[in-house]
Image (cartoon, rainbow, N blue to C red; front, side):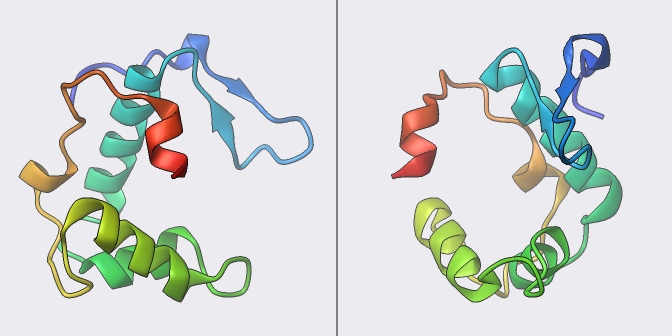
Length: 98
């Protein structure tokens, strides 16, 4: 795990408890990195995205294309601990949505 996730500061959407909201981007990235490392390590980017955002609920192919474009990875890239480590730079939420 990449540092302790502050679960006590996490809130959950009452309408859909599968989704959590975090008080800061950094805490959210740390939580996501921990989850990915625990359950997605060794999968390819495409396998991980289809597990994370299944086609029954999402446009997984478009999601995979976007993630690969944003990260410079390919769908065949295998997820390693180094790739899943939370970013240490100042992350701006609006950059993720573009």
